Length: 263
Length: 251
Ligand SMILES: Nc1ncnc2c1ncn2[C@@H]1O[C@H](COP(=O)(O)OP(=O)(O)O)[C@@H](O)[C@H]1O
Ligand SMILES: [Mg+2]
Image (cartoon, rainbow over all chains, first blue to last red; front, side, top):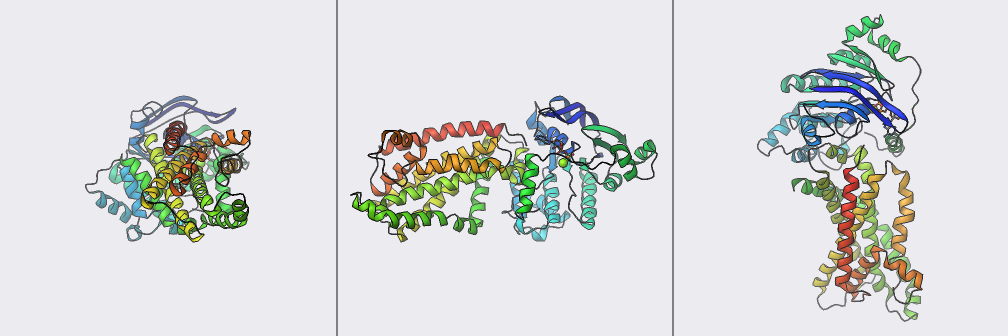
């Protein structure tokens, strides 16, 4: 369903994604595990037509994002690392606007929205403005929305960041159920080891733009000779704390925090 | 078509729901109307130019349309990183339709803001002395919308090239404020020094304010048809440039 060959992205002289190759099968749940600044979001942006690769090849559902942008965009749903809801619209309106953009027919649309919102337990809040939602509720709404147009692939970029364990647990249950019911392929990024271990079939560990290991959680532990994935992860990526230069998005994120506009 | 409509609808709904922002954005025009209107009214009258509030009101309407439009355009920087616009960037629809819908919505909002200032200016002493007030008010709304269209497209184009708010202050200082002060919004276009005369002539807002003044107090420097033509052509050019820049956005 996803095939990536020798994918590289350079920002000026800096290589954010360095000669990455992997593939994801239909119906699989695949995790991209890596510390901050590893190149996870940059990879997702290239897979989802938001960034042009410097070199390498991508195949999404049989299409190349650089050439067949439109077909690729029809194939996936996405939950971005940063919020992408309209705060001044209600939950229902956010869903409805998405349906219009993706040309989901109006027949049975209300029913589909109800089904998904009930699934993430937000149907009774459907007429509440999103700005009154908690971070967890917004995330759940984004997940429901990403499934609305029956995409073949779902991309989730650090979907659980900043959520409490209860919400996180719930959220993965929804995603796993939807993955089963709709046979949606799921590609997600995370820096939580236990999340990758518990949810994903296969994991690729990425660091400094390179894939340093891949396989099931058990295989990763065997490869590194460690008892748990956390140790395997530290073994693979080292113990130094990551300091990266702030990008434009980072600067805006801290601006948002200073102004008290959080997700 | 549905994309344009939904993007337009979203801007309008957001506007109508953010009452505090509507009111907040009225502070500046009211201040200008009162401070300039009453502060300079005497001087203006003594110089034989007539009632300054009546002269000023169309300029202040133009100003608030300018500010609302540019703000709306530049707000896109935020919208595409943390807002709904980001979601539209991966939707299987043409970027031009997204941009056009958003600009139309922003321009509609700025026009509504201009209309509110228009109504408020009556409280400051502005009066219409025309025989067909409704016809001329409608004409004024057309001018407000054209000003709004041009500057929302300009703001969107600029925002397409910026990755964060660092450039925002520069835009305010070097685009928005000069556009306002050099447009004839607060002084008459006649009898200016030559340099100023040419500067005002290349400021798009000049034609908008002139059109507003022509519509509301029948005092225009250029022909109204000429004002409309200039604004319409500039808006088309700006929309083309803006949508090109928008289509190239990478996040
Ligand atoms: N637009 C950009 N311009 C320059 N550098 C960038 C840009 N986007 C990301 N980077 C850099 O690329 C690296 C990888 O970023 P990212 O893919 O966001 O990491 P992750 O999502 O794994 O935390 C970081 O060092 C980041 O600062
Ligand atoms: Mg990231």
